[in-house]
Image (cartoon, rainbow, N blue to C red; front, side, top):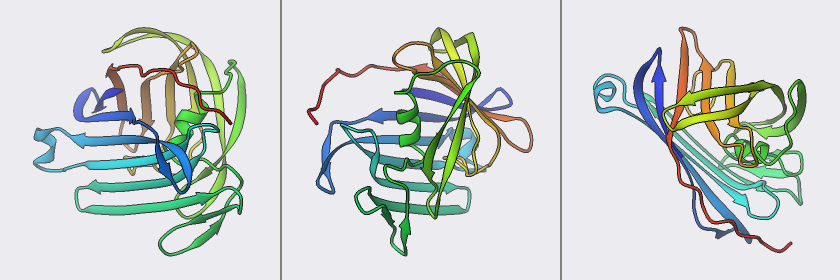
Length: 217
């Protein structure tokens, strides 16, 4: 999935999310899901952004086994690495061992896990989410259906609102809404995050579907 990342209708960067072929990670077969955000050449001259994250997601049960996030925004630098063990209920970072709920999600795997769930307008559900230093219970509200047009086409969507307590790939905190296709894929076609002035918008420009495979328990 490819996205234009904009602020106040100005395209300031390009984003991409890719599901790669499964690899063995901590003795589990996992999809490496990679997300990148990079500022355009023009914006890079005065504020360069080069963010990336990878979540190694168990192919059978859709929970993360390992998460890595590297933020490079202007002079700001942040690296996060965590390994998850659902059998012991612990996350291991380079500095700490942290107690976590079983099958906790990370900032990237959360999007893929939520897309597997049934969504009905005017309902909500909760998901345990790990932020890098601690875990918390994230509430996701299913708001309404809406037909929208983006650069990748016109889609019937369902609008969801995660009630965030932590920043995403852009480190600004704020209100987030996500428009998912109203079908079995729940493809994220539009994301809007409120910041101090205006909104950061990620708009789908094109995508390519993978091959459906089944993995035995």
